[in-house]
Amino acid sequence: MSPDTPSTSSFTADLVRFLDSSPSPYHAAAGAKSLLVDAGFTPVACKQTWPQDTGGYVMVKDSAIVAWWLPERMDVPRAHIIGAHTDSPTFMLKPHASSRHRSGWGQLNVEVYGGMLPNSWLDRDLRLAGRVVSTDGSIRLVSTPAVARIPQLAIHLDRDQRQGLTLDPQRHLRPIWTVGEDADVIDYLAAHAGLARREVAAWDVCLADAQPAGLIGRAGTLVASGRQDNLVSVYAGIRALIEAARERPDHAVVFVAFGHEEVGSGTTVGAAGPLMEEVLERLAEPYGCARSVFRRFVASSLCLSADVAHAVHPNYEDRHEPEHWPLAGGGPVLKVNANQRYATDAPGAAVWKAACEAAGVDHQVFVSNNAVACGSTIAPLTATRLGIRTIDVGAPILSMHSARELSHVADHEAMSKAMSAFATLAPLGS
Image 1 (cartoon, rainbow, N blue to C red):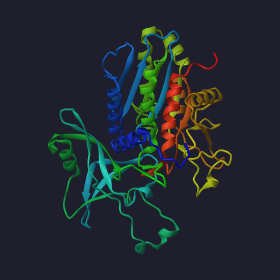
Image 2: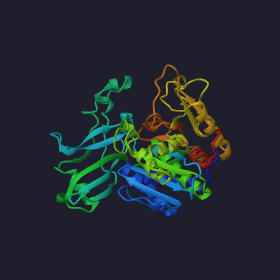
Image 3: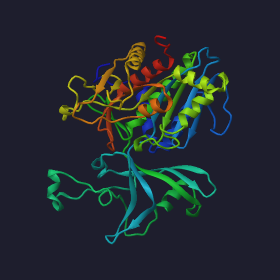
Image 4: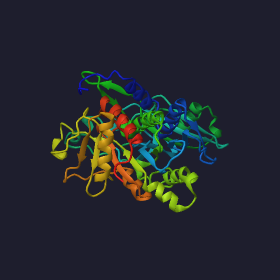
């Protein structure tokens, strides 16, 4: 597909709907589960005994989702795993969530979550989204219309802004949501959750850009939306798992979207936590309870870590490695770093190349400029935690960690096709 050719696939329309319906990680996990259940996957709970019959299964735990397909029998027990994450940089409501100032404005008390680009959040209409826990322990997802805004200071009051904008996260990034009244934002959230204020015990609620995802550009081939890092990988992975299950490979296929990647992954549902190991241990149980059986299962498995990649920025070409420029519309990106900030190695790169060729999609490579520090993903954590060969890949985007990011429609569908091919790929070598 030419980079300027409009996408006629339903994949793009479905992706846009998924982005719009996922203003928080909890909504993303619930939405992904719904897609899988609609495709015939059976929901299970972490606390129950999992079925071992052939078929697909899905489990949500807080902001994480794990889904898998099991064959009838594995002669060589192994799994092909696709990993992603549901969270994005944002603001989280603090426990004392709202206050009124002498100026008359009512503001929200928020905490910065993750490594955001704070200037991108200024003068945007913001909604509230997340989960509310009631006094009886039940959990309700909540999502409001646009209700808040972080206003930028007028140029007339700070002429130095043109030379550089400095934002203090405590003083300058507090959203306005009322004027002239003492209003409690938890009252507002309770009403949207169908609860009385006295029934609200606690909440995990973030801010999200209220502008819907859209297709822009001359031919409508550019996706403009918040939270593409990393919901585009979540959606591509879900579609890949569904397609892989239809192919019925002779090994397990697992999809996992962790929580808390943007803040280090060190939680019960993060990649540094026990979630993935527990899932694989339970999938390996029918083949023996010995630890050695599990270790052989892991040693025979592969993991594809799907997070977004840096497309070359036309206004900052000097920040990119000159011989490795991922282009929008040029296909999925293999991410390589000699210092193992990305986990890709040569055998893993060969697997990814084989998957892309089997899927019939173009592929690219990203390596950081030596003078620019490299980011990281869940892949090194997964490789270290499990001892499993892990490959770092992603769709190229611009404005990563902005309130609103930009990508090409063709790259997401190509990524999903390559993921599906990876999921069903026969082992390379011995």
